[in-house]
Length: 114
Length: 116
Image (cartoon, rainbow over all chains, first blue to last red; front, side, top):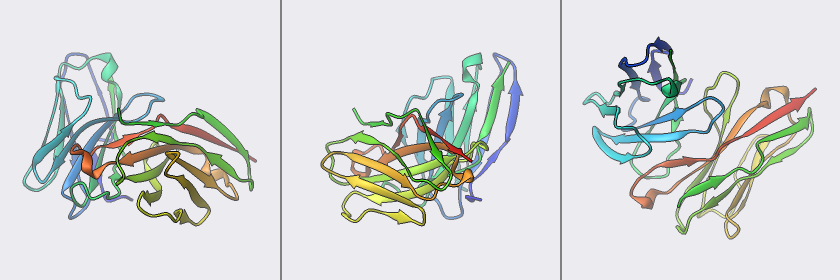
């Protein structure tokens, strides 16, 4: 158990809909990262938050947005969903900002768009 | 561009034997961190081993060790005494604290099969 909690674990939704994925980082971790892994693909970096502030953006679509709340949990919002958005979405956390820390992953949220 | 290359999409190893997974990366920075993560069929991402670029000594964790060649920008993972539970996707990753983006860049993965 990495200590990173993601909900929901599985989600099936229709095209055009909007979903929210939630992540609770490890206790004390200030950094949260979101990654997307499509079937049999590598991990694509989406976005990084540190202590409530956005620090880096990767290949995140405009239909996607994220935020980190004062209690440090984070949410990834996916809207106008398309079939191609079906993927495993990982949240990862680390203690500090840019110190070469190991990032620890949650179990991921499986999103299926039908 | 910051890239991580895993040139072996798939590898096989006999149980109890040794296998080496290769990884190369591209950066002009001198301060960075390298990681190997394992992703079993459950899809959970599990840290295997971590290496600081400023350390010359290769990291070791039980049956897992790395061969870090900084000049060649190579970071291979050696698994000794392979076990059935080692079967998984293995991802190499690196992190540049000085890049300003603080991203962790992952390779495309190597699928390891362990043969009984």
